[in-house]
Length: 318
Ligand SMILES: [Zn+2]
Image 1 (cartoon, rainbow, N blue to C red):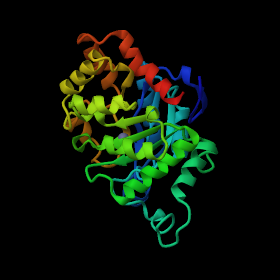
Image 2: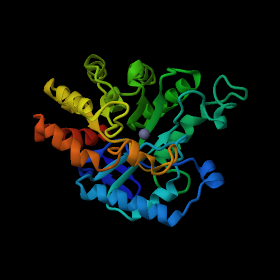
Image 3: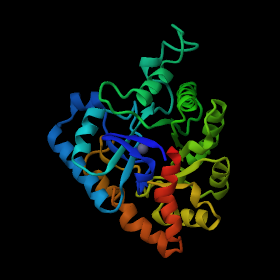
């Protein structure tokens, strides 16, 4: 068993319970928020706590929140939300970009104007070892992304910095990938080159694919398949998402499957109120209310569901 850092302190990996490996509390641009949005801090925090407590009451004990730089990570607000729920929230460090590095890193680091060591690696290590800013909250895992544009110079720099921090600390990694271009395979190659144990990597958004050859290749290299966008039916419908997990379990891959919705208590990428209309299943209740019953109905055993929800997230940290 291993200590896992959560927003409210250390939890033993054996006590994480049913875990959704990719959910956001807030996806919120702070610069946008202060300039353009109407914001009632107390009401937003209370609403998030309520949504997460509802998730807890549906039988989920822990979420991993990969909201890093580029997605609006702000831990003091997450701490307030965590006070209002029994759900464990595990936070991450890293950078979310599909292309360039943020300007804060453009001019420093290897092969840049001012040179020097990679500043991102140092920041990631600080978040993992000492805590994020002065919050006392430590990140427990790392996040990067590789989208349809592939391994751009900025994406590669972030991925190598994440890899270096993982290799040094053994912290697990989650990668936002684009299944259509099989970018998970590129992520595996680059992370392995940096010394990352691919058994400690979630290939995120693998669940957008029904390509069993691609998925099994990722799993055979040791990584977890993030079947983590349940409810985003516009990218892949519910039936196909469920059927893909059923087939993976039938082939003996339950030990490589993790699940989530990639939902948020609030995301400022879309007009508020649009999601319940356009993507009515994209909410924290969908897995408990619809996905797990559908998996059982199609013959996935309770043992496999326990493996997916409890054992795999635990082993990810051990
Ligand atoms: Zn996400």
